[in-house]
Image (cartoon, rainbow, N blue to C red; front, side, top):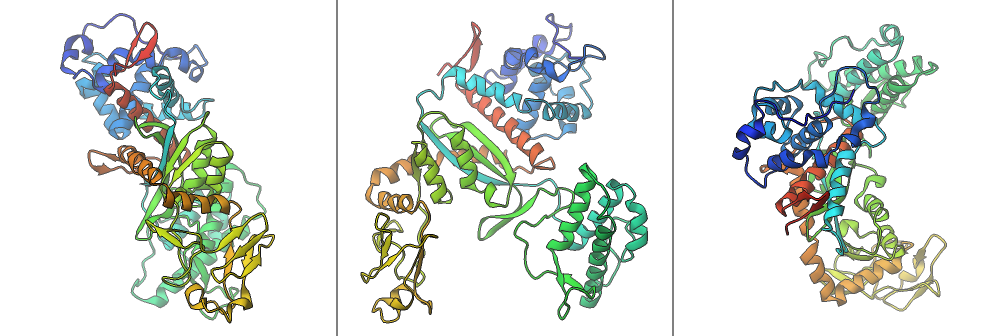
Length: 530
């Protein structure tokens, strides 16, 4: 059943005895005075539908603890210790000085209850309600978007470790798999989690091991192919098939039927990096910076730093790209907005979405690359590395005209092919090195991309607005992704749990932002001093 806070204070109430030691204006002092207004019992009643059993920790107390845990980036054990030993936490949560606190598993229990409820992000929703009531965003029509990579909670596994781990997972989760493993898997003792003992400096020994493990994996998948599976068992078998296929290829001289395999001389585009956390991925924030983990996307009001939307996705896949998630943020907003983003957001699809919704894009265009160094791009005139008016596109006539005044039609797939006409062209050396001539591929929203490059070149006020407001979101990203100068590492497995963490993290940061502006609850309403 749901527990509720007592109206009277206990003899050793921490707030009454040592509340004066907690700095005014801190998160601890705010929660001490307003946690029940912020997280009322009625908002959590559905988590405890039965009126029987031992009362839970009051919702206002546990919600406050979850906020503090996420804000300070503590593990469950560290959080339970802080609630038991730290006077500030006792004051913030209304505990008595001699309160022994709770077991760390209580936090797991509450997160699971929230995750399986109809409103899994109600802590974030509560803070959003406060933001709305204060009016801090009223009349503010700017939104800045950005993303960052957050390291996953597990170690990246190599191919051999993944294969062994995936087979062991099938053994644990698929009914009847143990018998099949004993029957068809002979390349390794899968009762042992450690790596096989071979001469790792011997290429032949490594290749033989890879072949044995891949053959075992394929044999096990085939043996269980006709078994009716669901849930975790179905996922475990699918994961084994994926791991066996993503990193292995037929050995040199093999046609793939003789059982000889090697580690693939390529990287799968959506490669699983760990069987412990199958949602984690390799990704690159830049060509030089490769990392493993998840991508955290954020939209924020740049003048106040208030986060207006957030989402954790896997770090690979076009559906999880910066512009794709920004379109989701766009759809969630009411009213006209000016959207600020770096060149990663400068796609035709996102610009089209912004334009169709009647919003304004203040997004740095992507620089154009010429097929020939120093030669013609699809544009020409240069300002701040952006160029305009080289190849002329006439959408009404359906044609493209090159710098040598040669005009070609745009095909149904939006390609203009100059082909043989380039052979005798006096400007060919500046235009293309292709033997088949220059080909121009146009995005369906090429008009918006071309206009964006012109505007960036012709409107200094646009560039000034970008330089003024867009960098502010980087500070928000830094607050989300770091704590005390230390880069955060995610503590949970899977996209869903890490997305819930991000929701709590941005809620805590938004709340701290508002507290710094004098947030208080008076006469039944949330107000700011500034």
